[in-house]
Length: 213
Image 1 (spheres, rainbow, N blue to C red):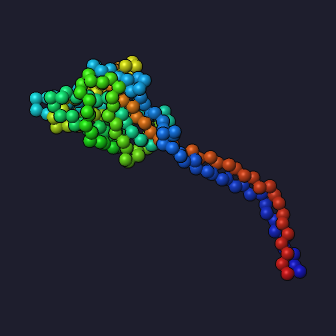
Image 2 (cartoon, rainbow, N blue to C red):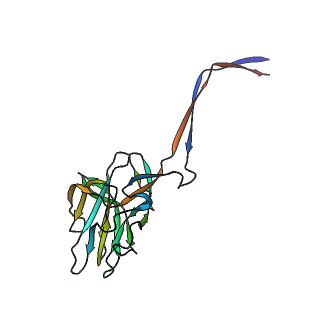
Image 3 (cartoon, helix red, strand yellow):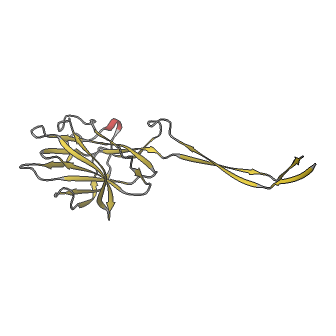
């Protein structure tokens, strides 16, 4: 009988577990919100979002910078319209280019069913299908562009939120920024990033005897 001694020396094993969100609502995070309670906003003070015959071409954009990483779920905006005109507009999540709106990351064609001054807590929702990764500390812009014939309004916030806004008169080809301006009412909702838990397991030195006949 031969005896072969096998020595199992110290081995370090790192076990990582990815904790995926089990419920989107429970794991949602607010990247930014300028709404008051229950999506409250100013019913009667607005920025223009307009375009069409006899109307100025106006687009408007609001900046935000997440403090934590997340995956985009939805954007809510307080956009109303003059019922004499149509109610179609587009919304875009954009990068930041030297402190103003840059390229489009995701966009939506939307309609607002809310006449101007009719409601101070009614919002239009854009649901993300591309699940854009929002990086902490990175500036983004939410921009509203007019449809072919809309006299629209992006209502202002009632919580005193101010920042640098941007507007365009050529469909977003160029932008003009306005620092220290009242922000329009909007929010950006994301899904919390997956949590990775790592456990270091230390197997102390052991020896085992293997008998071979």
